[in-house]
Image (cartoon, rainbow, N blue to C red; front, side, top):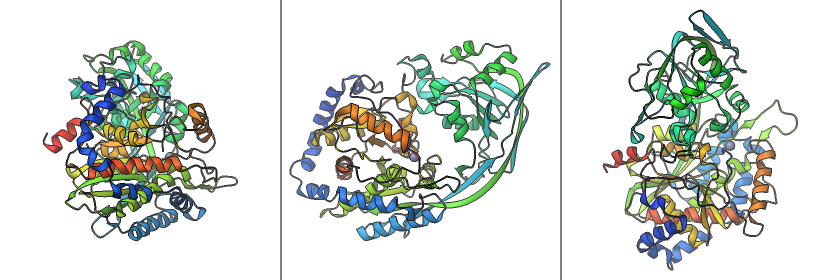
Length: 575
Ligand SMILES: [Zn+2]
């Protein structure tokens, strides 16, 4: 999971959008949503005895037992391509079989995911040469660079440098930072985040809330599409939402990735970050003020600026290939079985670190034994129904989330079921262990029609829906649902809440901060008897209600107007 900080109940930070319903206040929206949907929902909501019975099969005791198994030392921290993986995927397969689900990939419960780990030798320095000037920038302090190509070495030599602003091509915003320039073989310098964040102008992109165009993953993808040889992102702490130390830590040591058929040769040869200080030095060398071109880059008429400098750098790698697995199981639909609603959660965590003193096992109890156990509870609830839903339900336990959403990304690129028959997805990454909440937090509120389903289901539990407090940090792009969003499938990522029924918001915030400081991505993320899983049961029941309702409809919820995924979905669905 990626840590995020949900906001206290506050309506002003719902991401703005051109959609008419989004200009309403949340209360009006939820009322409108309820009225619109009441006709279809009344059947399911009013006196549906089998729904109530199914909800009752989801219990804190069951969840506890499953979390204890998945997070036990025996499962060795569930690292991809390790004996811990073997135990984990066999356990999940056995549980899905026991509950009565069908294999989700032909006659197999597994989808193989080819992984590669690439370790760059430190010490690749960047040399920037101009007319009579030269600067050397050191690996670690000034730059962090790597290659995703599956090769022993990668290099750029006297590659022309071009400043491409935010490096964005977004037709829906009338934006093209690569217009009129050929960057093939060149080294592009890119700003992090997007022009909406930089200007805080709600009319620019999504205002303060980050769009996918702001994520570093996008910057490298676009630079590759443009044929660049290298892409270097300027690190600034605020728009990146983390300090240089995080960049250094995340990009040293082995980097896991997926292997495309072309061995990732279609990616740029060299990817990396440079510090703000490095950027300032490079622009000075070019005789250009960094601050003024940064301002130019926020304008739609910005044109890429050749720096008249050349970059050289070479990298050496150690490469290791391995295979991991996604686990898939299906509850077949009764009348529209070829349409799929998806529940997903990542099963993987960090495994064992033999170099640690004391406890060496990353048990990952909260992150994400809880979400994985949630899949089993939901599967059991669906199998308890006497009358199966019209549509099929796919349970997708993915690998490699902690290494960069790899298992879900692989599924998105190699879907077992056609994406235009994949209705929507709900992702679970760390369930609530603090007990019942008055609210439920949505990361990316306002993105899709799924919000209305959530508001209605939350209403059944007398809860309200709140938005996450840091939309500018782009948490929507940092968990597995995003891998489906990216290929067009509407995906919902909800997470616990901010206001404990008994102890209130302040206590909730304190508890969450305590976890973040003491247990997040540490061996001490273990099950403790003081966990209160009643809130997790509420959330799972909420997710069940949403899936049950959609699986009995014939509609396809869509992205809201103005989101970066709507065009992909519309063209796939022939809208
Ligand atoms: Zn995590």
